[in-house]
Length: 206
Figure 1 (spheres, rainbow, N blue to C red):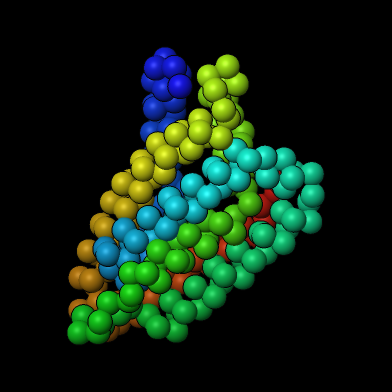
Figure 2 (tube, rainbow, N blue to C red):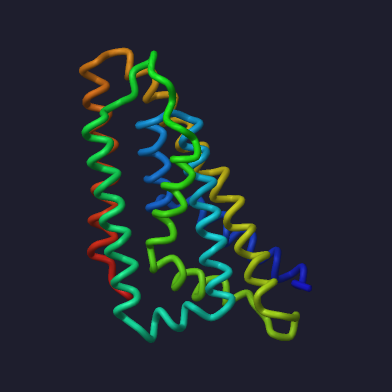
């Protein structure tokens, strides 16, 4: 059982974390611009689901394994870079979705969000460093505590990132009424994904 004082201390820290602009928020922004509000919400849900996987792995001790084996960190990282570049190429080639075209399948946005989160090895190290500050062996088993704290972060991130993507999605749908602006919108989305790939490529382990 997590002590109420610990939980009350964790909540504002988690909220501040969720409100800080980062890769997850930018990814949902790009998804919203590219495919609309529903895709943005789905991408946000995928990111939160990926985050829970990271939390579970951190609670099981995989974070220590990633720290001990630098090559594992690099393999996961470069897979993430390649996937983000593939998304950028797709956004650039496809451009904005025309108003009369069927929306991109929501399951694809969920998959993309989850895969982008899972292929960022920095997440599991951050989760291990951040959540472990609030975990107490005296409070009971470690893994359930990680899951509770991770669920709080995941829920907050889902709402905040989803709202950012929804706003971008509404703006994106408006801009697609003009073909030229639609092409610009596709380039902006591609630029966001490419920037995230660059950020991940230059990521350091510490």
